[in-house]
Length: 89
Image 1 (cartoon, one colour):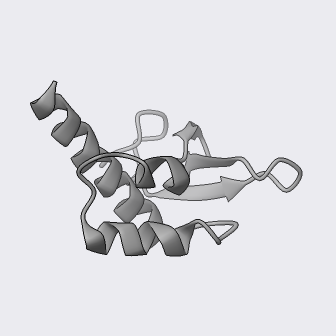
Image 2 (image 1 turned 180 degrees about the vertical axis):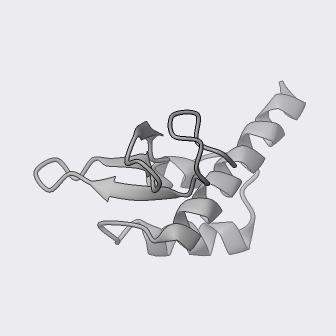
Image 3 (image 1 turned 90 degrees about the vertical axis):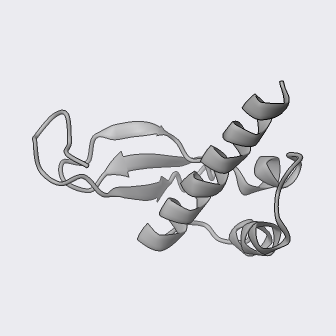
């Protein structure tokens, strides 16, 4: 995926605010803010989550930051849940 700001390859990374613990996603190429990072605790409450995803999210809840792989996985889980919710609505 190409960054809309700098045109370089865009990889997302997670930044955790030390005082609040709030996690946000930023572009690795230029550091631009993308959006809030999905909250594993909220995703765990969603209907339609698989057992493997549930175990993965339980582990993420304890972490203060996420690596590239974890960011990609949590976004994939969020996307799958959004598609699931759209099918049932």
